[in-house]
Length: 493
Image (cartoon, rainbow, N blue to C red; front, side, top):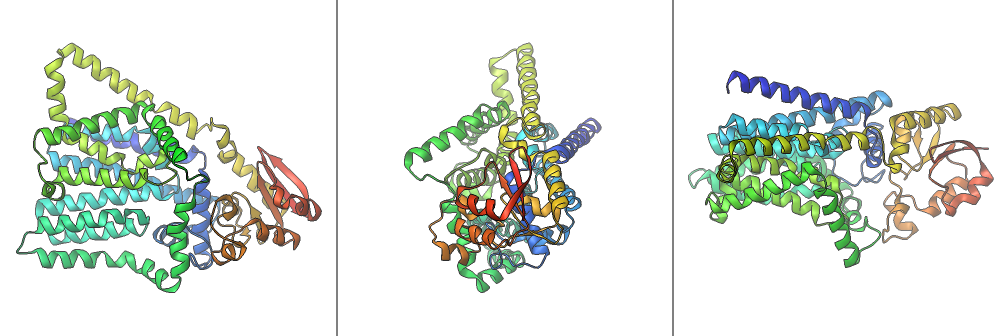
């Protein structure tokens, strides 16, 4: 790279890191973020995943970060810091992938720019959830596959397998990538080294799979219900009309974002160019060429996230990097196409408008995720969470058991979550009776009503309204103590 390119590269990384830190410092808490925080703390306190409490993902994230999750707000900032680190390293990996694959610094810098100021990337790489870590690991897997493809060195293959195993054991859905990389190693290795390198690759998958295998052995029923069956019953509606409308609405929310619309259109055009220019001609090219592997990563990850019911707009973040990489591979022919239809002044004007629109499209993300413009986000503002948790500690001791309808509160106070409330099972249409809820360590209304009658929790924190299923016994045994922003605290009489 030239000196100018290096300066631009460093500047873009500084901008990206600064924006990540800004979002991580001020971003509203995500509802699910409280679940992941509390689950990680539970493992740190010695509780076993699936056996002692309900957990919906695989073992990697809470196991790795458990020792860092025991100090309330200090732990929160630490865990968000690791999320930012994963997001920042993802940007470095994306740049390195494009540069090594294209040998074109300009294409790599354009890709990094699109990534660095992407609102959806910044929004979800600043909250402690699996998204940033799985994003980093999928890019890392592809980066080391690319190095193996280029250099044929065994240790690149080992790192590919290790990172692929890590992402699978972080989120089970990524097992969709395992056949892709197996076929690719088989194809790229060549007949002389094929058996040896397949064995090495398979062995490299083992280390991160060991904790998951141990859970399958010791608690198979709970493991499969938590991680697979539960995912099939997250939605209240399963009719075809609801499924179609959910997907169409999510698509609409995606395309109205100029950043995602620009990336989406350029990615689709890039797919066409791959076929038109015959850079991908056969099925073999899909597993033996960088362009094909990027396309397959994009299609498989998008498919696995856009197929379930319901789908969420945030899922786009999981595969958007491969869309940016794919279009970066095609910037030269895209530029040639633009030159064929425009004059120099027109091209500059088009690029200026697109760039300006792309940057300005970041501002709605600032309004939503930092200022909490949506009514549903008010209770998750950092200031609101601090207010509620301060009142919880003023009304009870740190050793007290609490029932909180948002599981993040006990994480911040250090208080004890009422058993089985790490995830509130009554919020999901699960095919379980009361005994089934108890078996899988989930709280239904019957369980919560009994615990309130017994006055097990010192505090009961409800969100929006007290559930009618236990409102009467709550009023008998507890008294109203505090309310803010729809969050109410009742304390034991």
